[in-house]
Each structure stands twice: as structure tokens, then as C-alpha cells.
Length: 399
Image (cartoon, rainbow, N blue to C red):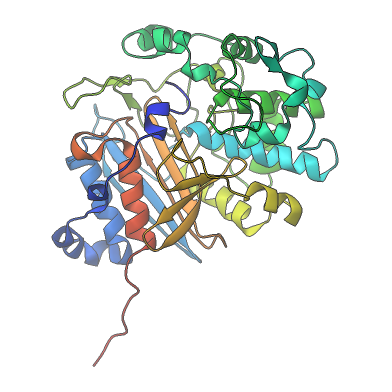
């Protein structure tokens, strides 16, 4: 499904995914230095998982490293490049949550405000009462509102071959909410946890109501322009293109199987991902954004604390992961990293780093599958995080 693929978010990864080939790492040590482990995973993402291409950028203090494997375009064979833009899927949610928290800091709204207060009558009936659902519950996925991306419409029109016919369909935010609330609530507000793109669709609509401006304008004015993220934007209207340098994005249309054919799905209508999964960026821009966020440069301490107060999805999400307000934490073998990931047809990405923001890895693959034992691209990303953040400390040279 477009936006965040639920099947991927509930995949339990095995320890085998973290294994890397020591010989390959040693062989590539000279060219890639301390990031040879990450490069080895990128290479394996192409050679073993069968992905078209994989790339990563690492920032550690003042140093930056970029690595890639495979192709940005299978027709031309062009390699992936640092400036290549891609669809970031649910990492859009981090931008939206940041805007909401900035508005709270400005006393223009409260996380305890109800959905009914800002969007009167929209979430009502069929077991829903918008006056009992808060903005906080939207941001931390405890609202109980059904995910429009997990409906019969989504199954019928956006899985398998139908996706190729429907990927240019246009939706309004209100239409997507109506699709969601045609299904009963998953649970009473605050009584459970379940990932729902509808939550951030509503959060995006609340931003527009609170400011009188479009969501894309608020994200630009508050985040991308101040941080000089020149390759990051939320599409407006039905703009199906990726503007600026980019490779091609390939999809198996959510049909499993190592021999399933893939299709070029680079162009697609972003309206289905409003507020929840439609933005476009680069590894470099995402690294800059998450460094600023983790360092506390985008939010005052109170809002920073709220964003990074993590909930345990208790098996309802990615293994060894917790969720805050638009951000996630991942438990590695050597500690915890913080950030967010996104999945959309043809493009999966992760950006995670240390809590102080000094050490960041941002990575993307231009395919939405992973063959063999890799299960999904999440296996690739987990292996990259382990290789980068849990590598042995360098030893001092001896004479």
C-alpha cells in the first residue's frame, strides 16, 4: 500500500539479516574506511536482496561519507548520487509532528485539543466521537481511528496490477477520512496502539486550520527554508513528478515472490499521502533535518520532551522499536538510535542517529522488496544501522 506498507511495519526480522561477510568488509576497508561495513550491506542489498539500488549517507561530527550500490536507473545503469531525490513515505510524519509541536509552543493549539475542536463534525458517527480524540492521540497512534491505507478500497485498487491503473487517482483529505471512518474504530481513544495514516492526515488538516495556510507552506516556512533543505518539499495538488535530480523507483506492487516482476512507478499521485507520506527529499537533507531535530534546534525543551517520550507498541510495529510523536527509536545490539523510516511504492528509507544528533545514517533503496532471507528492505536498513553504530572502536596504531 502506498504511504507506509503495513506488512513491512509488522515484519519480525531475524538475526540472520544482521550477518555480513567479513571477507567483503576487509576487502573494501581501504576504499571505504570505517564505513566498509555499511558499504558491504549496500552491496548485498543489490546482489542478495535483488534491489535495483541502495545508497546511504553517514554524518559523524563534521565528517560525511556517501556510499551506493546498484543503479539509479536500470535502463541506463546510472549510479545513485548524493543529490538524488526520492519519496520519503512516512518520514513525512516527522515533519508534520514538528510543525504541530511548534504551534503548541506558540500557544496556537494544545496537544490536548480535540479533533472535534479543529475539524468539527469530520470524525463522527459509526462509533467515532471526535470530541474524545486528542491531537496527541493522533501523533502517537493511540486514537483508534482506522487506517484508510488498510481498507478494501486500498486492497482493490493499490495492490498488484490495479495499482498501475490507479496510481494517478486523486483524493481530497476529506475523502480519505470518510473512507477510514466507514470502518469501526480499532479501539477506544487511548485504549491501544495501532499505526494509522489517517492520524497524520488529520494532523495535517489541523495545521491548515490552525494557521490558515497550506501544509506545504507551513513545512517550508518552518523547517525546509530555515534549514536550507533545498531538495525537500511536500508536493501540492496532483503533481505526479519528482522535481530535480532523481533516479527511477521500482515496485513489485506488494506481490511477494523472488520472481515477481518489478515496474517503474516513479510517477504517482501524492494526494493519497497528504500529511502522512507524500514528501520528497534526499539523504543529505534528511540527515540535516534529523540532526537539527535531535539537537533540539527545532523545538523548545518541553515540546522536545513530548516528541521523544516513547510508547511501546507491544508487538504491533517494527521489532525492537518504540514510537513517540512522529519519531521512532530502534534498539540495536549496542544501544539505541532515534529517527524515522518511510515506505511508499518504489522507495523505502530510514534516517536514524544518536540522541545528540552528532552521528546520523540516512539510507534509501529504490525498490520496495527484498528477496530471499532479507524479507523486506527493513532487513537491509537494520543491518546498515548495526554495521555503522555497533562497529568496534578503532584501535590505536602500534609501532
